[in-house]
Length: 363
Picture (cartoon, helix red, strand yellow):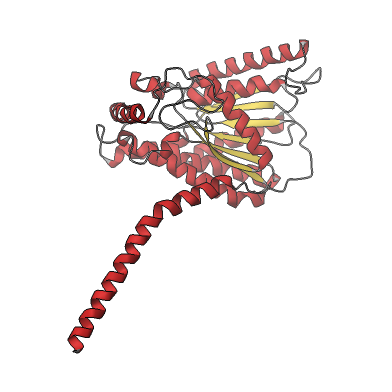
């Protein structure tokens, strides 16, 4: 009798555990989606600010500024320097001195053209222009490999701070656009060795964290500053594309780090943004299979700058650019036209997904 009772208790316990396991597995996706929805709707309160007004405007440091999105952001913020609340200085960091110099020259030209246009006619959107006699935008460059470790980043940031002090800007650096990134196929067509993943993680994730740490070091004591992490929409790809496993992992980690930093640094008066752009027309996406999905890099920079400004007012932000764009097929809500045609519909999207994965695996 006791043996039968023990047997029934054992069977009952196993069945109960099976039921709990099944219910947990069934509820997990729903709970995950609910948590993501609630997180996306939550906007942290605006952080406290210092009551002292800065002597001058924004001084923006951009990593990975020698090409791609970083270069486009430099030119976009140079153009916006013609506004009353525009930047007074850009500090461009990158690994290639020649390309940095070219971007700096383009940014200077963009600022000069925008200021000349603002002087002859009022801004169409009502934004106040610069008063007469305002100093020209200062553009500085520094060769810096963020993947080389914190010492190189700290040296570049300290040099930028010194330049601001020499120019009489008591506010120092105010914005860090943490953009530097590399992309190399690691799986399955590329190398499967850990050594292939390390350079990607060193730049995209660890380099970004080290840059943020340098930003916190100089901006937190002033209780004023904005850290902007430029990620990638590949952070949303779960297993697709497999060829960019390390790249996607680095960007997913960057998003998580930024979201956590937003909560942790608000008490220090800092704003944190995480921007995950969709495919943009840069050297990373020149393959024909990818080019049809690209958004024009200048339009992307303008849209991202708009969103970053909204985050500065709101206190934080984690979002994908363009906002509301479908992962595969369709266009962005209110976004500019893509550089190539987009496939539509679920069936076409599924075929495109397979082609996209194969293209990135071979990149």
